[in-house]
Length: 140
Image (cartoon, rainbow, N blue to C red; front, side, top):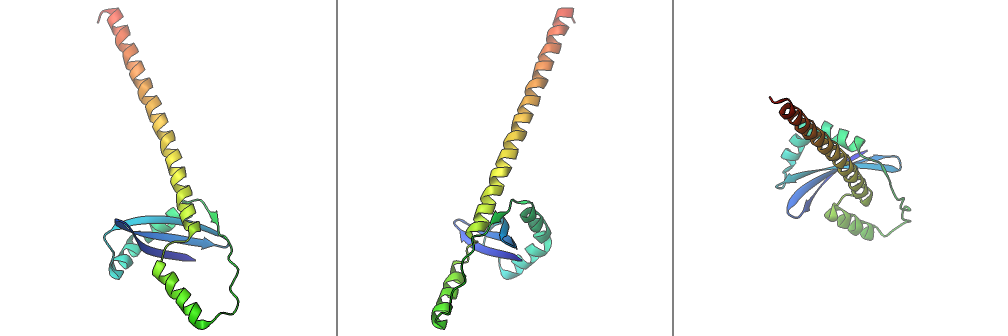
């Protein structure tokens, strides 16, 4: 089951796509900037929904804490609780954990690429210096 939640995270509007798979959740987010209208959101999902789903599926899974189902409740109280939950419209904490975990993995991969690039650049500079030194020794 997939859920798209759009909320205001000062100063931008953010959309979070949550994929619930059994007792695990995977999530990804997209920053919209200005508040998207329903039509703009629909067009965005048509154009970029596949990429969002792919990003969500590639993100690490986080287990969902099971909340026991409530017993019989007063219907008015249940309606107020549902209205409160709809007004909050924030992504679940499991989705936030999944996004945080994915961000950490991206940071680690980026740091590793940076180290490799720096090492390759340093090796290239070392080889150029060595070649210049050899050329000077030969008198060219």
